[in-house]
Structure formats: C-alpha cells, structure tokens
Amino acid sequence: MKYLFIFISFFYTSLYSQTKTNIDRNLYGNKLAGSDKAVSIIDKSAFRNSYEYLNFQKAMSFKALKKYDLASKTLKKIIQHPDNVKTFIIKSECYYQLGLIETQLKRNDSAIFYFNKALDSNAKTQNLKQKANIILAISQYYKNNKEYERAYSYLNEHNQIEHNILTIKNSKSNSDKYKKINQTHLLQEERRKNEETVQVKTYRYSKLISILAIALISILSLLSLALYKNNVIRNQNNLVLREKNKELILAKNKAEEASRARSEFLSTVSHELRTPLNAINGITHLLLEESPKESQLKYLDSLKFSGNYLTTFINEILEINKIDSSKIEIERISFDLKALLNNIQNSLKELATANNNHFLLEIDDAIPDNLIGDTTKLSQIILNLINNALKFTQNGKVTVIAKLHALEDEIATVYFEITDTGIGIPKDKQKKVFESFSQGSVEVNRKYGGTGLGLTIVKKLIHLLGGKIHLESEVGKGSTFNFKLNFNISKKPSEKIQNVKPYDDNQLKNKAILLIEDNKINQMITRKMLENKSICCEIIDNGEEAIELLKTKSFDLILMDVHLPGINGTTATQLIREFNKTTPIIALTAISLDENREQLLSFGMNDVITKPFVPDIFYNTIAKFFD
Image 1 (cartoon, helix red, strand yellow):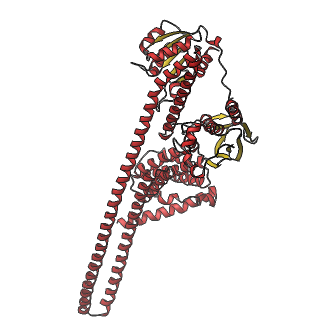
Image 2 (cartoon, one colour; image 1 turned 60 degrees about the vertical axis):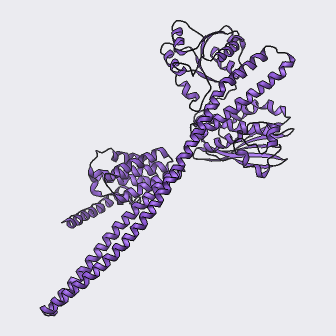
Image 3 (cartoon, rainbow, N blue to C red; image 1 turned 90 degrees about the vertical axis):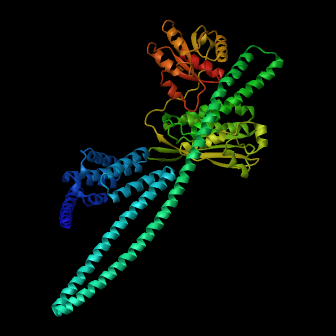
C-alpha cells in the first residue's frame, strides 16, 4: 500500500511538472523556464496551488537573470503565507535562496539572517538534502568573513549530512538488489517445478533455500562486520576531531579574553591618565600666559612639550584599542577630496617650512568632486603619512599625489601616494615599521622622537577602509607610501570643508558660563582659563545641584563633565533638556574606549571638548556658540 501511494504521488508530480513547464515556456520562454533547478529539492505537493509554484519558478528565473530585487520580492511573498506542514519545505528553500541573493549582493548580515531562518524552517521537515545546502552556504559565509573555526565546524556538519544521505541511498539500492535476486530465484524454481517431478523439485528447492540462507547470512555477517569496523574508525576519528576542536575553541576564547583584558587595561590607563595630564597641560598654559621669567620659560616649554607628547601618545593608544576591539565605526558622508587635501596642505605648511622642505600637492582633475567616505579616517591616514615624511626629511621635497585609478558602476578607485626624499628605511626594517612602538631602529627613535604608533594606525585604518598600504624605500634616497581606496560617487553636492575660524576675545568677554566639574584641580584650571578671557564662571561639583540651579538661573553656556558623582553628566543633560532646550551644553570628557562623540551628542549635548584641553580648541569650541 505504501509503495502504491508513492507511485501515485510520483505520477501526479511528474504530470504536474510537465504541465507547469509548458506554462513557463508560454509565459517567459525556454530560457526563463529552465533558469534555475532549485525546485528539484522541493516536493511540488507542498504548494497550495499552481500560482504559488509559478511564483517560485518566476523568482528562480529572476535570480538566474541577476534581477535580484525582483527575485527577493517574489520569494518574500511566498514566505508570507500561513505556516503549515506542507509549506515548511518551500519556505526553507525561499529563505535559503534569499540568503544566496544577499550573499551575491554582499549584504552579509542579511544573508546570515536568512540562512538561519532557512535552517529553523528545515528543522520541521527533516529534508537532509536541503539542510546540507543551507549548512554549506553558512560555512561559506563564515569563510568569507575569515571566521575559519566556525566555517570548519559547519563544513564538517555538511559533510556528515552528505554522508548520511549517501548511506540511505546505498541502503535502498542494496535492498532493491536483493529483491531482484530473490525474484529471479523464484522464477527459476517455478520453471523447475514444471520440468521435474514433485520430489526432485522439493529436494532442489530445499537445497537452494539452504544455500541461499547460508550465503545471505555470510554476506550480512561480512557487511555487519565491515559496517562495525567503519563505525568504530569513524567514531574514533570524530572523537579526535571533537577534542581538537575543543582545544581550538578553548585557545581562541583564551586569546580573545586576553585581547579584551589588554584593551580594557590600556583604555582604563589612558582614560585615567588624562585627568592629571589635563592638570599638567592646563597649569603649564596658565604659567606661560603670566609672563614667566626668562630662566623659567625654558622649563615651561619643556613641560609643555612633554605634556603634548603624552597626550598624543595616549590618543594613539586609545585609537589602536578602538580599532582592535571593533568599536570603531565607518562614516559615510559626501565630501570634496580636492578641498580636503588642500586644507591638509595648508595646515602643514609651517611644519614643512621648519625643516626647509618643498611640500607639493598633485591632484588628478578626473577625480569626481562628490565622493562618499569617511573623511575623518582618511584625513588621519594622510596627516600621519605627511607628518612622517616632513619629520624625516630636511632640505628636501615631500609630494602628495591623488589620481583616479578606476571608475566603474558609480565607484571611484583613487590612488594615493606620499613620497619624500628623506633618510629612507632599510629593507630589513620595512615590515617592522608598521608594528606598534617601532620606528625601524633605536637611533632613529632617539634622534627624531615620536611614539612609533603612527604607521600602525595608518595600516589598520587603511585595512578598515578596504585598502592595503605598500612601502618602497631606499636608505638616503627617501620613501614612498601608496594605497588605493574605493569611494561611492555622490549625486548630491558634497559638504563644504572649511577651516576652523579663529576665535575673537570679544566673543567671550562678559559671558556667563556654568562649570559642572567635581575635580578640584580641573575646577581651578578651567575657571582660570575662562577668567583670563573675561568670562564669568560659576562652579557646581555635582549634577543634582546643577539641575536645581538651572531651574532658577540662566547662563550663556554650560560646561558639563561626563563623569560626575551621583548622576553622571549625560543623565544630567537629559534632565536639563526637559525644561531648557536652548542653552548650549558642551561635554568635558577624557573619552574612553566605550565613548564616542556621536554617543555624547545623542544625550542632548551640543559639542565635546576632550581632556586634556588644547587651549585654542577649548576657546574656539566655546566661541562658536557666541557668533
């Protein structure tokens, strides 16, 4: 009865398929009808009607013609139908096909979402062939994302499923073979019965049955033994692989934990150093403004240099930690590359003059005016490379080149090159200069100074933006750094990149500012810096009292420390914004690994000043709210 049912189902399925193929050919032509074989995995009886089957075929046709949007839209319509036992297979296939389309469009997050949905739906059908395809696609996804342990785990699962499918097929094949052998022997026995006497036929039949039984038992025994040995070997191999996999996972977890601990430690140290460093830099600035003695000026200049060096060092450590911990985000804004490079050149003219260098900028006119990219990280890369070139070159030439390398599908590939005629880098040191705290040699470090982190940050940022940096150098003749980056082309005009307008003391005069700060030294320094510009400063050391004061008294501007006792600065800002939405609030923070400018602005703050303060930036940031 079971085989009769299978035969009838197969007959109607074949008939339906032939009818559907004719419909497809009439509607779309032979090319569309045969464009995808994905339906071979699906039992057509799972479809509620021919219209649903037609939609699936249509989606596969759109996919084959690379019309991915239409294919996705059609597949999502099928998924929206109510769940039942028969629709799980087709829904699994739809999710799987959506995952493949998202992978093709390089939308990895969406792709893994659909693959996981396909896997969940497949679990309700136990369709092994379909599950094998989904698992293989997930493995490929992790491989593309360089998560090799996960990729290997899913690939191993895929191979196991394929092995199970093959085992089932072989089992069915052997069963059919034995049935044919038995049928042949029965026919032979019937012929003998017609030719021989009843006694001879009975004797031969009994003898034949005995021989067949012995042969069958022998064959089954051999097969059982072979299967047992194979299972033992496979189990042993699987046990070894599982142990190795556990060891790899344990080692990976330990490495990740160590990396996290290192990042958190460096971030904490960097953050905590900013408060005393703000005091050093601030007091040095105040002392320099009070007309020190000639004998004191030398010491104060040295103190200022040391403070600035430590500030740069801490900032670079924090930058590397952010990149390594994947807490750095890539912005996508419209900008004018030519204007950006011209502004960078103007800002570094004094540094070029200090070492008597010619600083040249060559920009290809073919580069589109409006590109989309992360201007902050691009500026950081180019500034670091130019600073290095100007520092290690004296009485020479530094050239920055930007030219269009390729233009295709609204994507511009721009080639950047920074060349100098400086001291050069030995061949055996060229890879080492990209490592943290390395400048090629101790002698170079002592003579030219620096943290040895600039090129490390450059390499990591270029990699983050999808490029790769190359170095060519010869000792005594100079160095050339080059890299290529892809930018989308914007149809909208780019944002104008403007230089920071210098503040005017008159903008700050007689302004009333509320400083909310709990550190006594920072209170003293900030108040003095404000009073030096004729600003009236009132100080509150906690957020609760500041909120109550602002309900009854108004100020021109509020300086809000982020880390306060009791409620922190961000919470205090949110509460102030409930009754005061106009007074500018500027955050004062030693930005840590878990903080960023955008996050602080989201709480209602208008701008951010980073500790330790750079006086010009401090005054400029405040002054722009008094234009």
